[in-house]
Length: 132
Image (tube, rainbow, N blue to C red; front, side, top):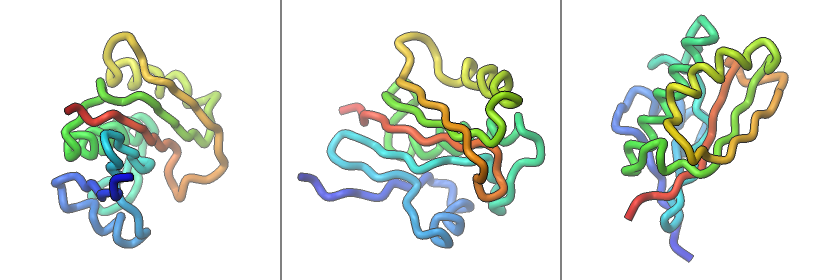
């Protein structure tokens, strides 16, 4: 079994967040990439104030991690999203999602309603296959 390898985006500004909470942005194991939950955090770690901005920033942060591993959203095979108020947030998330994920075939997607995301209202984590 190959050893796990930490992957971090080239933008150094978010490394303090990873160090503070002791996690990797993603782990590569073989040709699979397991991306930690990405939130709509600004460079200082604080949440974007509007919900739509949080969702867009979470996707932007996700793209940075995927890019660091040589992946795009087309390589994503499984998505899990976490929502603090799914009924109210669903329309906004779907609008941004439609812009971000591209065309069919779509990845698996599981949405989970939660009560706490450390001050955020949306989080996205994925599993991707790293292209050879």
